Length: 326
Ligand code: ADP
Ligand code: MG
Image 1: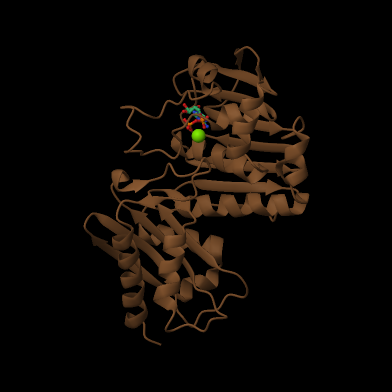
Image 2: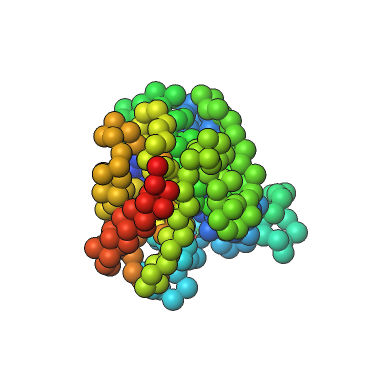
């Protein structure tokens, strides 16, 4: 593998949790209804993702690990993205810095196929028995790139980061079953929920804790083609340390300064500064009204009309807080 590949790879997969994010997003894009994730040594030794999605044909599989070979840009339109992936970078990046093994089968095929990429060297596609769906195993991540390894934290911290990412994705996709297990991880299974607000709240109760349920105000508003759906804690609700603020933009968990600022703004007058709201809000809007192409890891977004989105979120939260005046 050429050096430039490994450098580019480092931007996409800087730690095990980033690889998990990319692989789980692929499973979501493949229409999986169940995604199982397992890690060993914080993901350094092993990351295994098993899904029951549409799988790949041998030809798809061959292409999937090539750089910029994505199947997800039907019209070549980067500005109207409906899938989580679109760069065709994740699998080749992971294959450049680990041993990547994929076994997959489509619903139509009688037998599946497998492929191994080791430190950027691609093996042959071989027939292999497999259930419908895709199983990806990443072993010895960064074993050949000591500079990357050095930046990793303890197995426990890396495992925690993996759990955090999986929880964020589980919040973003309540209808999908998620299972996580592995060393240093409190294993969980989130059963699939019904689409809609009720299922969303049930998933949130699983991820954020049952007590959130009793302390959450619902938010459901739409304006100018932007829809907000979700739940935000009452200002009286206090959940220990740290924040738990989840925004999902068009199915994509995001960490966004603008949105965090909006939450701070909305709660500023009613919440003591040592308290933190817990909330999860889905923002659905025309894909062309938001740029997800800001960073390779794609956790930031850029709204075409940030002032409108910020104002809308602040307004919706303030309205809910007033409605539930305490
Ligand atoms: P991207 O997601 O940006 O297209 P990736 O490198 O993540 O790029 O994946 C490359 C391609 O491999 C995808 O476009 C898809 O066609 C295929 N692929 C990857 N993972 C899966 C999966 N779990 N199920 C089905 N197809 C997959
Ligand atoms: Mg992808």
